[in-house]
Image (cartoon, rainbow, N blue to C red; front, side):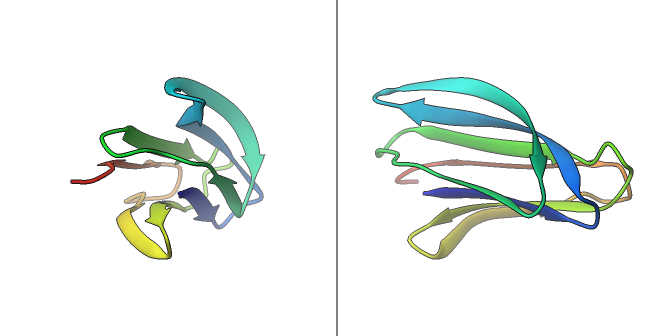
Length: 90
């Protein structure tokens, strides 16, 4: 599994569900774009990633499983939020 954020500026505020063992927890970071987070997820787990460019640029997100994009979103305007979610196995 992989979360991906990309955009027109150098950084974004990222909020995502991270998995360590069997539990998901919400994590928040200021990340450098483009950004990705690779992890292992199991069937039935909820996946979520969102971002907002504090500098007002454009932003897009993706949730990728084995090279296949499960969900993709683009922020509709400069400075807006892009968010993606999916459930594994659905």
